[in-house]
Image 1 (cartoon, one colour):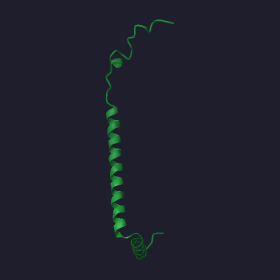
Image 2 (cartoon, rainbow, N blue to C red):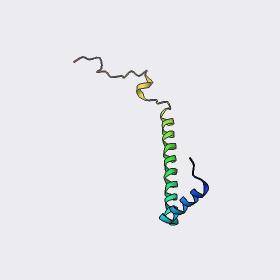
Image 3 (cartoon, rainbow, N blue to C red):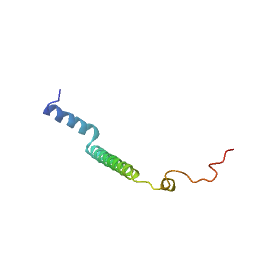
Image 4 (cartoon, one colour):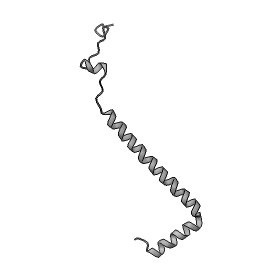
Length: 76
């Protein structure tokens, strides 16, 4: 059940009286900055995942994944 408009106005008035407008304003700006930082971190993480899926051309892959180690045929 959703509260009616008069109940919401009374609730908001009580919250403003308890915390004050300055405290609520700083709380709102801190919350906005936290959400903005979270979204930026999520986008940065997605960009890193996309770039890690690119082709990786290293020396092991250039010769079919076979490592050229002259000592690999020797048994101890």
